[in-house]
Image (cartoon, rainbow, N blue to C red; front, side, top):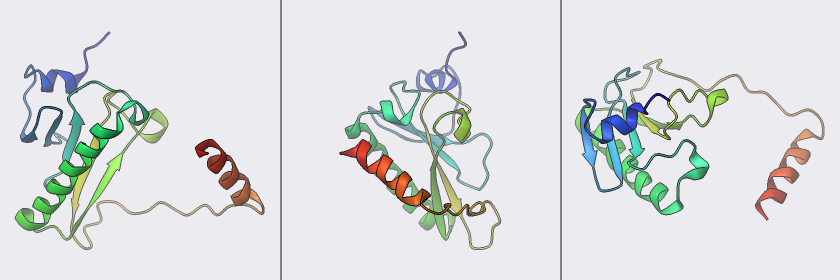
Length: 137
């Protein structure tokens, strides 16, 4: 099995442009950025999917994302930023190591937009709501 590229970066076997590192979290510039300052925030422990990551680690990663987002605004002049996570192949996850993308944005940059809306069919919204709510109770 091919070794995880992010784990290689964590171990220092592959280079990266690190912008933050703690005991549990690493943040570095994406090598294929969609905007200036596009950053990946990853746990230093290998987890494939979002649901595997312990809540306390997600909290720490969230704090790092907040700091980087603020730095993008103050240091890069971005007007805002997106925080994205692709979870699973169907959602666009290409590397099997959970990671958040922080994408600095400028007004009118055309980087990405919200996809076409797909309204619920009659009665479908309640069915979906019920299934999700029941799974959470």
